[in-house]
Length: 336
Image (tube, rainbow, N blue to C red):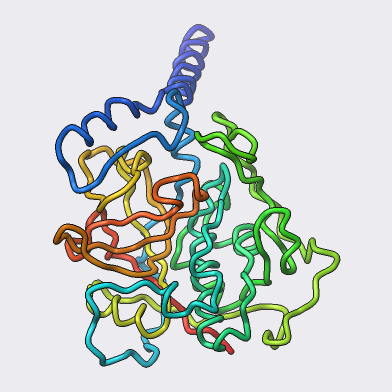
């Protein structure tokens, strides 16, 4: 009986170790993408010998919608013709948050970071720049107990339910001293040389505890009526034109999509998956669209800092639900 127990423990330990030490096969993926005249180019965004578990640590958006309630009303949507190219950064130039690339660090907080980023943009747009303060992804990450598991992943739709019921405080980047509760997980450099410290290639960051303001010098913005910024949540239906009109009228939206193992090496162009190996879900912010070499795309802000991809941005094929990017698109009505 004891020998069986030792055998089981040994197998469990071996399985755990193998999942930790499995290397991400970037070289082969990059060669495969770049040698086949694809619509995008690949390159190193992470160390050449990086653990697959490290990549997965920065993912964590779930797609569960069954039983989740969202309001069905829409904001007023423009009836004007949809332009071929649109970039929210250009239309609302006074809203700095739209073009800002956040850094989630070694934490699966994409679901919270992208939601807080979208609501920040929409508050600025709705108030015509009066409420031009970043909202705290740390507050959403650590205080929403029903959203999921913090740094181990969460549900974007539940995040918007929390934003509707409770709301979040203000808060900028790590050590920015901006807002009530700045982000609490250190940024790190994945591959290129820079000022950020080297990322931990093994361990996922721990979820910070839910707490009050950490910035002792914080002063509440005059444009914010209370301590929390709130929104009514709703899901934008799976329709390309409706998503475009929503962005065109009211600002960026949050989306979740399936990350395949070729996505982490994206550098430029319009991404279309070349692999069938799914790593996990990921939450991001759609800020516009366009066409490149005749191929329609969404313009999207990631949250893996500006060293990744195209200065923190990427393009993904539009109109074909690439990687389920058009299946779960969420926005919110700012409570101003």
